[in-house]
Amino acid sequence: MKKVTLKLTALVMLLGGTITVSYAQNKINVVTTAVPFLRISPDTRSSGMGDVGIATAPDANAAFANIARTPFATSKIGIAVNYTPWLRDLAVNDVFLASLAGYYKITDGQAISLGVRYFKLGSIQFTDAQGVELQKYNPNEFAVDLGYSRKLGKKNSLGLAIRYINSDLARGTFSNVNYKAGSSIAGDLHFYHHGAKENGQGLNWGLTLSNLGSKMSYSSDATQKDFIPANLGLGLAYTKVFDESNKITFALDLNKLLVPTAKLDSLSNTGQRIPTDASLAKYRDQGVASSWIKSFGEGGGINNEIQEVNIAIGAEYWYNNQFGFRAGYFYENPNKGNRKYFTVGAGIKYSVAGLNFSYIFPTGSGTSRIPLSNTYRFGLVFEMGGKK
Image (cartoon, rainbow, N blue to C red; front, side, top):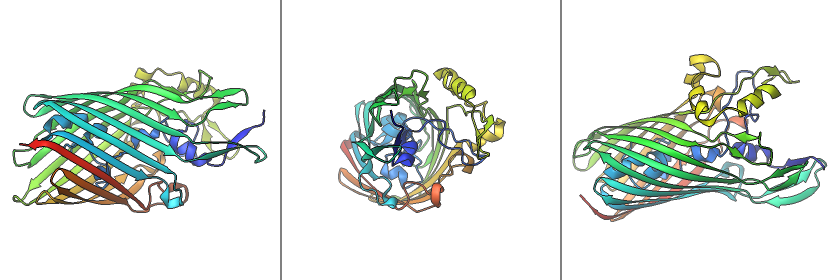
């Protein structure tokens, strides 16, 4: 069987790569996982604030960041729809992320939630080593969440969610290996503290454990399984209310993958540090639950652990609870992916409906240029059932 290659190798590696994807420099040791689209915030409002969202004011999109915020929502029913074009900076028109979320408050202190994310990866042409076209494939990924949240007293709440994940990147038999769609079941545990006063002023904070689930395999080879992006998140949000018409919120999110770092104990022909076959096999053989703990102790000590923390900061100003303006910044260490970008956004509310949009400024160049550079994102939010 001829060796099979992909014309869009970089895209596939970005969306579903394994641990051997990225070691361009000796200091770089990026923690890679399957289904990285789960790390992308589909919430347009959040993306306008640098992708914060763990402790901000609750709405239907809380299903994607911190489901425990939902019992403190002021409406009985919430629905949100978001659309994110992907790689538009590269003139790609058939790749996008779409999401649908909603909640229903059973009582004042309990709510059920639903979240759906769909990632369409466009069309990929398979070729052999000589460039002869073999077949086209239209890969896609999706995740469906079902959650329950309730208040624990007047200021605290807890949320639990279960998630089904499907990643269909390629199918068929090549080089005696049968490729198939990967799937996984994962769960979330979210906590939220609502410290704001009745007028909305005060400090809220949240803690999240997300994507705690089984590994994912894309082939018939049982040894080739990848971790999914289990994550630990901490968020703070402080709101200052000036009067009935003006208020501003400042928010901070810290996120760290609960995935161990591969050991780079060999040198390639180009002098780059890479894992040996033996160490890579040992890495893949780790248990899922034990890997969450090991993610804090591997890869170079405390300095490496600090480097693995992503930082998002954002601000949101509302006038008369009708017109909102947002800005934010996201930072990732150069040795762990080097995503750095500024965002702006705006929102308008009228009756039960709200319209949000955001824009990500172009940053980086070459391989460090983020896929969402020059991207506008759009979202609709509906809040029904009356407010307190």
